[in-house]
Amino acid sequence: MTPKKTFDAVAFMRKRREELSRDYAGLSAEQIEERVQQSLENDPLWKKDAHKEPLSPAKKRPGGCQ
Image (tube, rainbow, N blue to C red; front, side, top):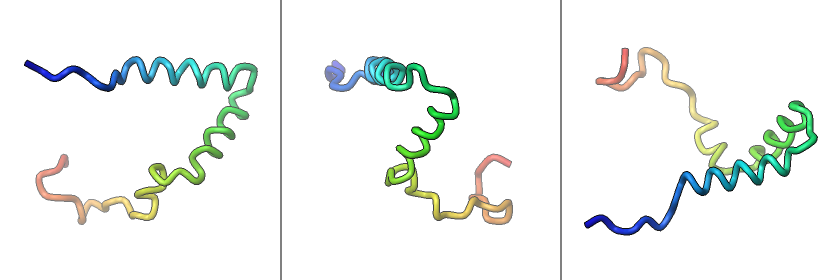
């Protein structure tokens, strides 16, 4: 028997999409982009790996896609 779900990702995303639609109603695409960038500016999850360099072909992990 599987345990009962405690988090419904689909319901969460639907609710969040509705919230964002209300918040962004009447704004231009540029205004929405500005708000998104501002919200991400100090977000530690967004910046988590920003300081890392992308892997160059010579540094790719073995067994990865070629």
